Every structure is written in C-alpha cells, then in structure tokens.
Image (cartoon, rainbow, N blue to C red; front, side, top):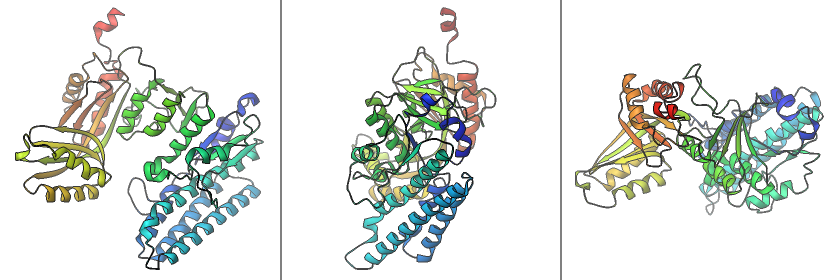
Length: 463
C-alpha cells in the first residue's frame, strides 16, 4: 500500500475498460501504521495501544497518538499529488484521530470509578485502534483512484460511529449491499468491526479473514493477494539466481508455509476459500500481467519439492526421569503453552523428554518455564535458541526427503540437531543452530530444487 502511486496505472487502472470493474479491492494499512497503532510486530516495542494499556503515563499515549497522526499524513502525502486530495485526507485523519483521542479519554475517565476496569475493555480498544489504519489507506486509495478517472468507492467496514452490533457476514453484506460492481470499484477496509471480534481470534491476520469472507459471500471467481514479490521456491536474498516462482500449488502447502511463519494466507482464511470453492492466486503487484501462483485443491502432477524456507524458534525441553509410563505430561505442557499464547511449530518426544519447538518471545517462554517448574519440581527444563529449515511440497512421496536433506546439510558442514517427517509426505523439517539457518536453506534448495533433486534419476528415465 505504501507504493500505491506506482500501482494506480497498472494494478487498478487497467487499460481495458471491460475488466476495470467487476473487482473488489480489500486493503491493509500503509506500511508501519499498524505498528504505530498497536506495537512493533517484530520487536514488540510499544505503540499507541501498548502505551494506553500501560496506564502509567497519560502523556505517553497522547504522544503515541500524535505519532500515528504524523505517520498517516506522511503516508498519504507521498502518494496524493493534488492539493484537494491531500486536504481531504488530512481532514479524514484529523476526524479519526480526534475521535479516537476523545474515546480513549472518556474510557479512562469511566475507569477512574471503582466499578469499571480498563483491562476489561482492552480488546475492544485494540479493535478500535487497528481499524484506523485500514480506514485511512482505503480512503486515500479511493481519492487517488478517483483522481485517475476511476469510479472508486470507499467501503468502510470498521464500524466507525456505528451503534449496530453486526456479525461479520452482516457487516460485509451491509457495506457491499448497494455497490454496482459493473460501474464501481469498491475499496474495502481490511478490518471489519463485528460481534465476533476479529482481533480476539486472528489478531493482526484479520485483513485476510475479511478478504476471504468477501470472496465467499460474493461468489468470486478468484481471490487474489497482491504482494511485493512472487511466491517463490526460496527467499531470493538467500538463494541467488536459482529461485523459481511456484506457479501452482495447493492449500496443503499454504498451511505448511503458515506453520513456518511464511503466510501466503491465514489458515482460517484459506479454509473459508476452500469451503467456498474459490481458488487463491498470489501475484507480484508490480508485475500485473504475470499470472503469479495459483493455490487450489489440486494434487501435484508428480512428486516434487516446491519451496524451502526457515524460521527461528526456541526449543522448550522438559526432561523428567519419572515420565515413563505416566500420562498427563504432554497435556500439561500444551495447556501452559496455550494459556501463554505460545505458537507450536513442531514437537518430539521419547521416554522421558518432551521438546516443543515454538515461535514465541523468550519472555513468554520464561513464564512457561516458571509454571512448569512449579508443576514438576523434579523435572529439568531447558530453553534453547534454534532454527528450523523445511522442505515443502504437495507430494514428497518416493523422494527420500529426510535422507536427502540430511546428506545435503552434512555436505554443507551444517550441524543437525533434530529432524522431523510425517507420513503425509508434504514437508520435512531440520532443526539446526540458529546461525546456520540461511546456509541450511541455501543447501537444501540446491539439493532439492536447483538440481531438480526432487525427481529421482530412475523416474526421469522412465518418463
């Protein structure tokens, strides 16, 4: 969205008038705005929401709100060239920011009475603030497109000043009810206020949930996610020259990518599209005539590795000598990880050790470690930084991916701490030292994809 000005003449304003309309664009916030509104996604540094929740310093959250306003103005100032459009966007930001400021001040005043607790309202506050970013980007996109002669229509699903309590489907239907798809191009907010509370279940993955639900409700022929890059066989920054566009894969692979923190689409959004029989396409927004990668339910034409990716994790290991033959250890660990909202990537166990490979900040894991120590005082708990490199494909059967991967990593002199493969044959994971992650991805890509090692020699000859 931050490069919207580059896309107006290509992605949106296609030269063929017959295909300019009949499309719905669901937009996310401009780059960095949601970080200012909530918190830094990668570092966790506090934004407006986190400072307001802290309650210790009123000046802190007011300053954070001012930074949001400045960030929004800078974002649309770099895109809108006409003074009238800039003025309209400034007015829009002023209205939303002042509305949010008054709402937060009123909430603080209400919670100064003993019967009300600010903590009870924080999820709704997070919903309110997150919607500001998408509303701003959708409004600005509408202005920019109208300036180019496109009949764009701002569709605000954020529930701003709307006293009705609608579920997600009703909110979408209400917003899209009178849109003329033949003559209008709806620009829709990725955040939708609804009774279910998107933030509660999906947190910052809500825009893809809104996107998929709109596709299902409108009976879309295809759902398209426009990214800044193609969905490729590996990160081109790590594997120079040999990276390939996937072209075609299925939702099973998309789920594995999501598990590795490389989301093509949120798993719940993918489920909605699958059930509605709507295929998903991931394209490079800056190459609008490239078909990108189609994701559907079709099986692979032949066994092959399709993508190699990696993720930094922590290994949470519980060793208990008395675990043998005793039930309940695994369930207790899972309960604690769930309570502390720790995401599990993979796990392994033997007679007296259970290891979960998790994607979570160390501070959360320290709390889990403390709870485990209280529950099992005789157990030994260890947290170690590691990484997982994974080879993923629709069908890896017959390719010996585990042994081939072990051989490739050993040849590259990379230490292998653990390896996992399931009977479903869609992925194989290698646990390695964190500093070896990038080298492992390059080595596995060379073995499985660059050399076409995913197709055995005898199978090639038989073909």
